[in-house]
Image (cartoon, rainbow, N blue to C red; front, side, top):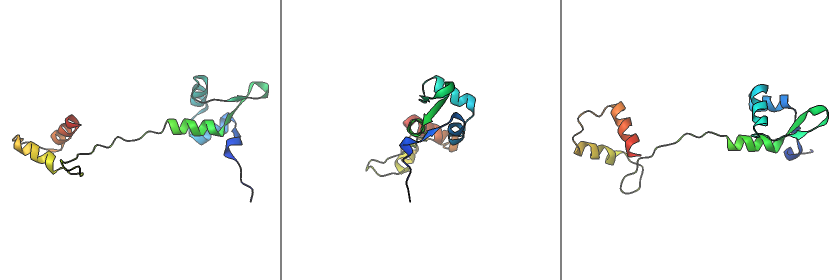
Amino acid sequence: METIDNNLKLYSRNKARKLLGIGLTVLDMYINTGLIGTIPTTRNKVKIPHQELQRFIDENIKRERKIALHSSNGRLDVSDFFNDHRANDDKELNSVTLFKKIMEKN
């Protein structure tokens, strides 16, 4: 079976926008601002190399920030956090105040 080298693939604007799940207007904005590179072809058309789409995807992946609470021994634990607040006599430690305190600590 013959394998296709993705680095040699060139996509039309329409195919590239479908692969990215965006509209042509957004794709054109990315091209015009230099976020996605193109190769000029005949009749003022462009082709988008596979590696350009892959680079764009790799650079624009969003990741969630995870907050970790660590105890003094370096293990993931929330008991020290609660103990600190009990020592400070925090009488009202509901989910909203708990979240605020966690965010303040990090």
